[in-house]
Length: 473
Image: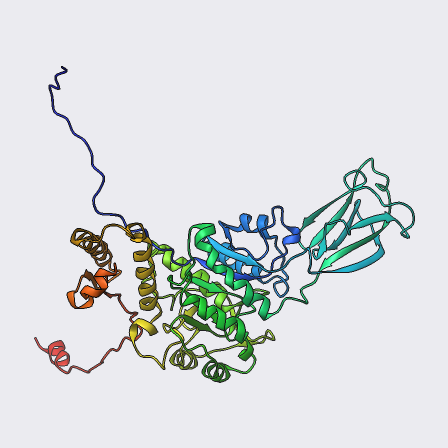
């Protein structure tokens, strides 16, 4: 038999499981996109993961017409201004059915190209004929081709084709129509947020619908979904009070108080913001800022986005008129549970630490944005980490293993300053025999995330002893 003469080692898998961290700062965005211009159009109404700007353009197209194509506003802000990723997008615009006919008309050819608006759809309805519309249609791929660039859909006359030297051609086509897209359509699409886990393997923790969240029906569904994606995962809904944007900050407070938004799952934003000639919903930029802050903290949402820089140069109302919000006025908005922006020290910054639950609810775990998000994040992480032990034999070893693993993670978060303290306990009085017999175990998690230091008070006093000291020998 062989002789093993020497010193040997082997390795064993780590007995303490690493936590499967829940996603933090990952938004799901509902709206419309110019998918008719996309190279690989995303499925209509389905959650689609996007890893960056070029990926968005490939799957959804892009246009500066943010009123028509609301997802483009968010993509521009998130990927270009804040440089964060990924994000999940859901487009409700369907070029196959949401279109209108544009009758044949003569178009001027410039540099062998005809420029149509980006709303033009490159399908069988696009017919190119000789000037005046007579005769047979030219052949796509032989006489002309079609491509999108910027805000245009170009019909390019091909060298060697029958119409290459034409100065005018007749073009008929179908164009995108968003007439049938309303709040109900956006709200219905939000049901598909439930598919994120099974389709993409992740769950978003921010729900955004720029241009639509101010609609009561949309905001209501956003709140419902944020309270329990797949019936278990927690998120935050970022909701704009755009309807009050023209009436000043006091009207925004009245609008919030009159709404059904005063829940911990909601973060209410006012007003609109602007960079150069581009206007953004505050929820759009706040989502990018939150993702950026989370990313800088290793994916943990324990730090507030308040007093962090936005990428804007003005606050505006819905008509584009500039709003000069004072520090005192911004604080009045905060006291009503509204997040705003302020240009007070060091440029424009997000301003506000409270969820929409404030001031009706004063429990810090519900009202402070970073504390509430940490509760969501810890809960979501525990669900994902320990899903694998469901249906395992229930015994004391299982309970001790789970308790130990959670406490190791809690200690790590505490050591990193992301918690002031945390622990998991199995309490006898929370686990009656009847429940244990039914396979029910309850673990009690105590966590204390740090709150934002939103008020610093200095007491100044004249000390006469320094006068004596200054003039003594």
